[in-house]
Image (cartoon, rainbow, N blue to C red):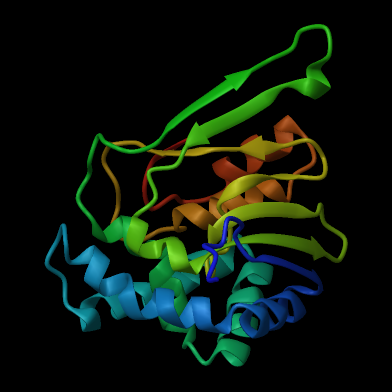
Length: 219
């Protein structure tokens, strides 16, 4: 009997940024390739943009990310090496939401704070995930050298997504219709910067130091 899987694949990586990228690319090669193949088709459901133009914007985004975090760029290059998907195609996965029109539909986040025991506070959301992307979804734990460990539920190939780090910072994400700029630090890199923080002040700094491409609500 064929049974329907009820759990997403679980992957754990560790080491330097480049090493983690290479491990992710090896462990999730098929999911990353599948996601990269379908990405432009999903973008073009809501906006008409050529693959050439989209890849040019992706390529132009690298300088913004490099200024924000050279380590994150190294992880992308590590993934490219081992997955066979080019660095520009991987960056395109990170900037898809910059290419699409502003919408006021999307996920809903919530949080509860336990006054007596703050450590048992909760953050959560419903995830309006595109069903076509479900085959590329994984639970990914990264244990970077010298930084907080983080666990995300994410499409393979993204630098960060919904999740929690081992310093007690959990995060859920919503789109936020508001003015944006065509180029800047893509949203998911800010999310990763927050997971690399170990305090509320650190999370605020991770957002403030980026020239952001698009607005978003982070709970």
